[in-house]
Image 1 (tube, rainbow, N blue to C red):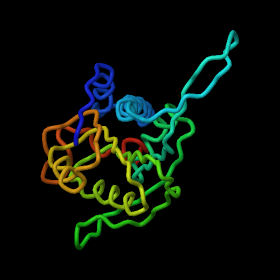
Image 2: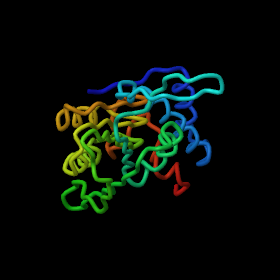
Image 3: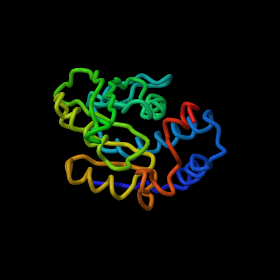
Length: 206
């Protein structure tokens, strides 16, 4: 199920990301800030347990997350969203998945996978700035499921209708939260209007 997170602050930050003159430093900063908004929305229904806490004045009740939270950046561009999650949830565990396209079959091939062993209540947050064709992100979610994770959400910054359709076909049980649903893919499978290659813009490799 797809959710476009609509917020004035997200729209303003997206304008900075789309601008071709934005520096890698500012691109990374705005991407992390947008990720915080997406995570806030995606994690609203996490289960909490009450715990006692001592304030400077008295004893009261607070709350802690029950779920074992694991964030999974899809290499390499997903790393650009990682800081946003960690600033919101400092205790989150981190796993990584690397995918590359096979030049003959055009299908994504997994070249790296390192995830924490899932507990019964583990909650995986898969992050990738771009949901374009959906092939790589679908493969990433499949790999996370194969590792034993049953509760998964996906956070993306920009999505194309074509990629959303693939994800909803392959993983109807996974919720997708995105800062923008753009118009379409072009002939080279770039999102339009999009923001270019997120990995290159994050790391200055244009």
